[in-house]
Image 1 (cartoon, rainbow, N blue to C red):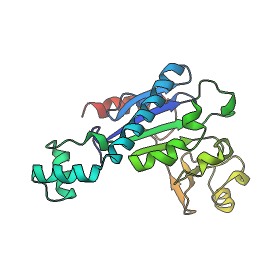
Image 2: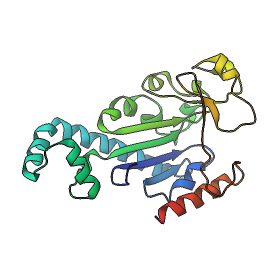
Image 3: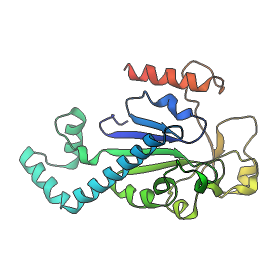
Length: 223
């Protein structure tokens, strides 16, 4: 629903390396792993740079400048502006959405290559959302996410848990999530959900999933 001009993804992979498979997608600006701490630091610095620039952009009366732009371009409404932007008739790079996907590793305090500014406290989650920067976290257990960061996460999904007592949504619903069905879990509304497998080769298992996801990314990039 959004072009690469409208949204960009950056991945910080501190787990098994699964995010590397989507690095070739047009919407993905880059994926960094714990094996490349310098790239991790550059990615985090870029996120903070975007957030700082947008804070300054908004502080300098963005509404006034946009109204002037609309008048000079003959644009009568935000709907017309979005239509023109989708066609490429106008540009608005300052408001491109940015999504950062990262996995929270266990014992984050002991991981020197993990930037605490991003996964250690709520700064990006607290400040970034208002500037079009979204933070997506995954963790093996909810207790691995620090409380001051967790408070800023607006939506949560729980896959099947090894111990239903760890559920922060509903323990009874968590106990009813079936075993042997990868992708099943519960939503904040205490409803069951089913996640899709990122592959288009006709298989429904996670066998060779990294290769299948990379093949999916390659196919998408062709169109």
